[in-house]
Amino acid sequence: MLPTILDLSSLRAAYQSGLTPLDAIEEVIARRAASKDPAIFITPLPDDELRAAAKALMARAPEANSLPLWGVPFAVKDNIDAAGLPTTAACPAYEYRPEADSIVVARLKAAGAIIIGKTNLDQFATGLNGTRSPYGAPRSVFDAAYVSGGSSSGSAVTVASGLAAFALGTDTAGSGRVPAAFNNLVGIKPTPGLLPNTGAIPACKSVDCITIFAATVGDGVTIRKVAEGFDAADAFSRRAKPANLPVSGLRIGVLADAEREFFGDKEVEALYDQAIERAKALGATIVPFDYAPFREAAALLYDGPWVAERLAAVETFLATNAADFDPTVRGIIEGAKGKTAVEAFNGRYRLEELRRKTEAEWEKADVLLLPTAPTSYTVADMLANPVVLNGRLGRYTNFVNLLDCAAIAVPAGFGKGGLPGGVTVIAPAFTDDALAPLADALHRAAGSGMGIDRQAEIPEASRVLPGDDGFIEIAVVGAHLTGMPLNQELAGSGGRLVKTCRTSGDYRLFVLPNTTPAKPGLLREPGHKGQGLEVEVWALPADAFGRFVQKIPAPLGIGKLTLEDGSSVSGFVCEAHAVKGAEEITSLGGWRNYISAKLAS
View 1 (tube, rainbow, N blue to C red):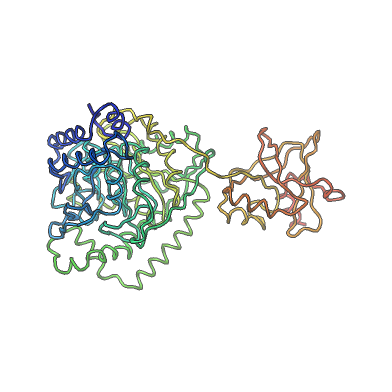
View 2: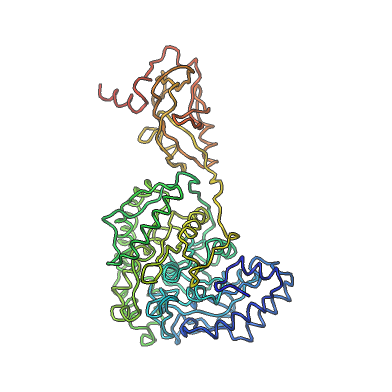
């Protein structure tokens, strides 16, 4: 017997105990027939073809779990090609039947996954609500009066209702995250270019991502790793350059009061506050940050020239088939006709200006924790006011791809009205793996189950554990401090400031003669009873640490420093002979105070 929500560990355990992929597919067929939402699929794979696919897998790989995704049922958003199934992008007149799978679908099928059908979406992936389709509007699995989220509407509902173990979506402005929030799911939004888009219909080609809806973060990461990888046929595909986040001392940026906007939805706001408290309980330092430059960047996606990319994707078809478009989608895309090349360049310049402003906010935080969507709406309300209400849903999502970030959306609990809310963790490009332990921990702490099963326990087998982030800490005491002449040697090599603190009291500080720029010499003298000296602890990538240490000139070197709390860290020390006759500045408490006093004299 399969659980209500299909996840990788439950399927693998069932297969190991004798269940076959054909048995699992029979259950999927039965569940699909019993579904009360007729708008989930555009093209469901026929029952007999599903059975044939399961049998073919068992013939190809007869041993249970012998492939990474052996017998795992999945669904595909209908703007992504799957061989033999029509691709419509939710526009019947646009339909074509691809001869080959998209690269991502091909990789998943090679790993043993079984496609069960093509899912509904906001037409041409233009929308965050799920109502802009001639095939109907999929609904929230918790209340059929409410939108499912979009544009990857059907994909989210297949997973949340237990029809598939995972589903592919796409994300330009939040389409792989908002439906996750509205259906109590995980939404994996990779770094742009990490998953190739070959075989996917573009919305905004330069920023589109193929995404994954899954029951758990661990499942989503496993599937992402099967699907990712450079593809030379995709001009925007990128080779992964994994980036790390702190294993301890993580700084999480949260909305400052001035940038909080939930459009009157107190329940979602409360769920966001609860998620912040859970992050704090996990040991993170909570840091309010200014969301304004991110919000301004987000506005460029629809209010700026990037809307012209949507026209570029369908310009030829629109010229001959304008009447076949959803009216709202057509209005958005046709709005690009007046955009000029000058506006496009000015928009790009403005984005780079805002990117520079966001850099100051990233100095405060390692990760951002934002509401996935500030509120939700009924289908009736959305249809009555489709542009304004849809725009509200993207308040905290639209900037992420424009600013080249990785993101994972996770459930954050349920409001009193029974609807779920979600939060998203966001960090710079290629932190995809580094984000996963935090996202997984937040999901587990929320206690909200998986999909429609609010009581489900997240399997321990899918837990994502933090690993060594590969960074090495070093304490600096002089010219490498923040704002000092040599600080760029740390900051410019990928280093991050961990903390400012003091040494234990048995250290003395001297001004080394004949050094440019001026440098201090730190010397430990057991028995000396001082107040400790100010130091900064930085963390460097391992390769950068090696290069940094190699360049340190005598008489300086790296040794172990004892800090005021009794802990030790690698840091700058000085050979004793070099300070004979040198000016001692221990009483000033640190190099920064010495420089300030010197400038004032």
